[in-house]
Length: 410
Figure 1: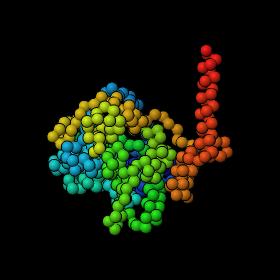
Figure 2: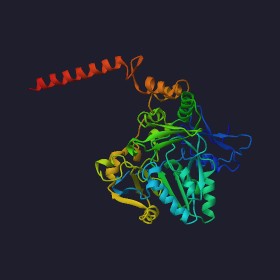
Figure 3: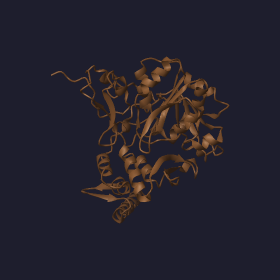
């Protein structure tokens, strides 16, 4: 029997959409699977079994060897000098400055925007006003549509192009193009991992039911209490809005617990040094330990110049950006895992978390499953009395044991 050449989603599918973009018959669409992640779906009635999708799939390719040599990284801590842009951005507003410089050259920007309150997609803009939709973190899988095709058409027409996405999406673009373009600049965003889309759908539904209003859109990184304690703001169709600090918001707690990410994210092959983009952008967490005089309320970005092209693009922006050269070790020590992902097993509890998201309110999933421990046949909530008694007892026993050992040594 001849093996089919059309693609089925491998276990380590990133949902990048490269397969859909290379398909000559448009037989592939990216669809949500039952766990809330994007995977390719093939229309077998139009598929010609050419095999291009499997040949191009980044999940099936032989992975490159990374040096993870942090000593070679050119890094900055910085922010946009325009206060309005600085406040409106997730952290330092660097993306906007880079994008504006491309638009002023008659270029086009490709990035992620909200299509509606639950769906993020790739889109393009040729205007500075259009950049507002691309600012801010989306924290949900973005549907790629035909973005790689569109980027190639813009490049072939001779236009300057900026593409911004996660490392796997930047890698997919480079693979799609097959060659380098002098008029292409890429930014890869420091990525915490892609959470299940089920979480966002549940979050929207539960919030609307509780508040009795319809959400128009979400803003995940507002700064009413400053950048270090950012808020999730819910904007409703009647003009009302409310917000929750990141540590109290159930969506952010479910996202940051790392128990419901795409399986490939736990051992991401693209979260390494060297990075995928010409420039890498992220938050400078821990900057207060090094630079208390920097604008910590407004936000500070980390900027990595990974290529000569990236370095040149940043050098042209000294009038728009405050760029301070930083030893990458300082940045790396504050959040090493997002720059270099260690080999990590998928949490054993992940299937249970995904299953309960489909059935329970998010608060209950977090309290009863995420924020709990398995003890033999039972699962104990960390906020429960029994867990606290056992935890306290263990600490007491450890203390007694350490004292007895110290007495023996005497």
